[in-house]
Image 1 (cartoon, rainbow, N blue to C red):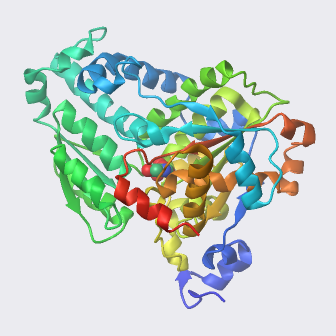
Image 2: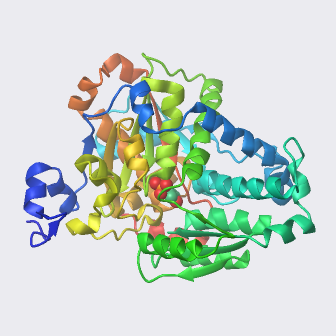
Length: 450
Ligand SMILES: *Cc1c(COP(=O)(O)O)cnc(C)c1O
């Protein structure tokens, strides 16, 4: 039965939507599901939708390099990596086996974990996009003011004069938590006045951590979209304020995309080949879409048709699946269909997709998978038991992916992924957050595993 059948969306009754898009029935019933997009295109075609290219990613990568000496000064934990914020990629045969047993599939190929959960400074994938956008803003202002010139050592921005200059400007963001954490920590350190608008579902410890860093935290009774809307409105009224717009920002997107440039040598070092006979499957937890979208974009540019990206969302918040599947993107929200958008996966609690991301990456993402909260908690336990790694619930969502891919004969056949290719495949779970979760909070997740 369809709970929301009395409503209509964009002037069409829910029954009409379900008749046209049958998968909506499972989405509305909050059932776990998977959809592999028959409309994907060859990489060189699909990439045209994005409106950005390799030169943009390289520009972002060089900017991060220019800031590396400053970051080492501000965050001594980055010294060993020379000021570059990057995570490890590690193989995990035992977790692959455990996952196969749990989801009832035969593990084929090799499984790796991309540990963005352990990125320095803010402990989530947001350390890529969020920090990048703050640094870009700082560079733009500092160059215009003549505080630095191109080619200078940016560590000279670690000065009272520079911080005084930056304190005349502000940075604002709306966030379910992790984006606020990344932006808040970096922005306050640079010297910007910083405000984070947070939704009601954001974790208390994230708010407390931000306040410790000198960030103003504004709490909202509504959800993520409401927090973003309020932040955007406040920022518009103030020309010295930069609003980091999670729903529209190209800078965030490019900051995420740099991950692909850095992943390529990591894979090569471990002897991983990605080509026609050796496909790469990448499973990315998806909220508003910027993080997974940016990473997928970078990977497609580098690996073309040989990389297969799959986004994973909570059954409570399948905004990207809904948007791409219906082609209505940000015109509709999951709540329009009676899907509550209440999930333990706070990084993924987004009811309406970004207007930019869905349209940009829709032809380069192979598929979309949904996962229930209880399943996330169970996957967290399975990962801890086999790898000793503890994460926040959002971060393990990718774990739902390999079983969905490896058991979907129709998809595999359509893509020409035969047994030989699957035996030579690499699967990469993008783990997106959790290393900063306080022990008490972490323990509560594991108590709830079934
Ligand atoms: C934000 C976030 C994501 C998803 O990124 P979006 O850009 O919102 O799609 C995934 N995992 C975690 C832990 C996050 O914080």
